[in-house]
Each structure stands twice: as C-alpha cells, then as structure tokens.
Length: 245
Image (cartoon, rainbow, N blue to C red):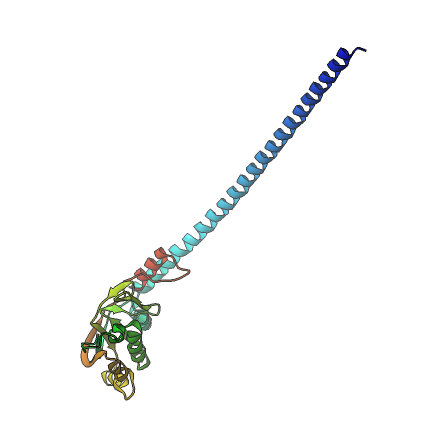
C-alpha cells in the first residue's frame, strides 16, 4: 500500500470519527433540551395546581369575610346595638379612633426665651422629643384617658422623635409651641405634673417654658392616620377603621 493510500485512509478515518462525534453531540443536545422542556412542563403544571388551590382557599376566605361582615352589620343595627356600642366604646377611646371630650389639662411647652452665652449649646434651650415624652408619660401615669400633641392624637403605636428643628409625631412635623392636651381629672393630672421634683420643675430647670392649665372642657380629635402593623395590610386597616367608626 502506497503512502498516498495510507494518508487517504487516515483522513477518511478522521472524517468518519468527526461525523460520529457530531451525531453523538447532536443527540445529547436534543436529549438535554427535551429533558429541560419536560421539566418546564411539569413545573408549569405544578404551579397551575398550586394557583388553583390558592384560588379555592381565597374564595373560602372571601365567603367567610362576607358572612362576618353581614353578622357585624346585623349586630350594629339590631336591638342589641346600644349595648354593644357601650361595651366597645372604651376600646375605641383606647385605640384613639374616636373623638373624646371632657375635663382635663392643657400643657404648653415653649423654647426658652432666655439669653444664653455664645459658647453655650443652643440645643439646651429648645424643646426636644424626650421633653414631650416626659410630659405624656406623666399624664398617662396619672390616669389620662386620651392625649394629643398639637391636635395629633396619641395611640398605642405613636412614636415621638426629633425631625430636624421640628418634632415628628404621627408622621407630622410639629413646631413649637407644643400644646399637650389630656382628658382626665384636672386636679390629679395637674398635681402629678407640678409635684415637687416632678416633670414641670425639671423642664423649667432646663430653661423650657412650661404652663399648665386646668380646663373643664377639652376636645381631643380622633386619630386620622393609618394603623401601623407588621401583619395587617393597608386595606385591612381601612376595613378595621370602617368597622370601628
């Protein structure tokens, strides 16, 4: 066999091997693609079943919600409505979702008007969130049934914090003077604030101007913001507010 024939057989062998490898790779690619396609179909079918199940659960919960709303409407308009309203009224007041009126006190906090040295820190002479918080805590401890700061009703979830030159409360920026109103016994509330070594004496020592007035008639507005919760959505908050009011 000549060298030419040997080279020809060698090249044909390489070509044949290349063709066989190409066929093998092509078959493997098609098999892998088919497997992915089948997995995609199975996953889609699985998700479809889950979606159908969730729709059924949603329909059941929606029916329960509709039934409970109907029961609530029947209770709120039925013969027992006055008794029910009387029973839950304290809860409304505690939650802050209803306006309240009564006797109480009005506390006004104002930044100090005293002159201070240039080297002194001016923050020492202005009202801070912690100053308002001290007054609010003292009022609550003395039995205040409802408290507001500059017409902003305090609730169980209300936070008081500094926001630059203003005080942030219920996502509202409040500026001095800060008028804190509280419904309760005027004598007890004022006495708690003005007691020796109490919060008023402390604030005055810090240079804050404080006045406490006893009033026979105070109206504290209802809380108008959303009810903040980690587990209740905004729509549920509105449903709750509609039910309470």
